[in-house]
Image: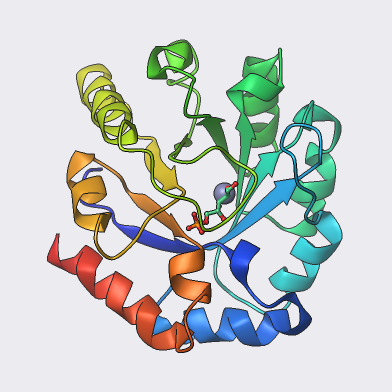
Length: 222
Ligand code: DX5
Ligand code: ZN
C-alpha cells in the first residue's frame, strides 16, 4: 500500500471559464485523478459546484474523479454524485452522524468510499470506520479555500494513520489535501501518503502541464 503514489490535481484553483482545457493540461502532465472540491457554504465558508459540473468533467476526461464533499449531511446528496459518475466519494467525519451507514451505502453503489477529517479532528476518531473505508483523506489546511499553508502537525497524523493501517492490516489509501508544494511533498510521501491533492501549486502556474510532470517525477523519486 505504501508504494502507491498518485497525483490528484484539485480544480478548485483552475480557470472555470475553460475547465476542459485546464483538465487536459494536467492530463498531459501525467495526473492520475481529478480532485473535485464540493462546498455548500455551511460546512465550510465557501460555495463551489455540485453534480452538474462533475458530470460535465466526466465527459471530458477518462481519469477517475474524486469528489470531496465539504457539505453538511452529505447522505442527502450522495445519489446525485454517484449518478454524475464519480469514482471516489469522500464525506467528512464531522458532517454526518451516521458515518457507517453513509460509507456502506456509497460502497453498495459500486463507488469507492472515503472519509475525511479536519485539522482539529484526531485520527483516532476514525478507529471504528477504518475497516469499511477505501480511502482516508487527511485535511492539512482548514477546508474552504485553495492556496493555504500546510499545517505541519498533519505529518504526525499521516504517520499515525499509516501505522494504524499497518498494525490492523487494512488496505485503504491515505490522501492528503491542502498546502502541498514541491518543497514538502517528499516529507508527506515518507509519512505514508498515497494520494496527493495539489491545487494552487499546479493551477497557479503558467505551465500547468510541466508543473504536473514535475510533481509526478518527485513522487517517482520517493
Ligand atoms: C480545500 C480543498 C483542497 C484545496 C487544495 O478546502 O479541499 O482540495 O483545493 O488546494 P491547495 O493545494 O491550493 O491547498
Ligand atoms: Zn479537497
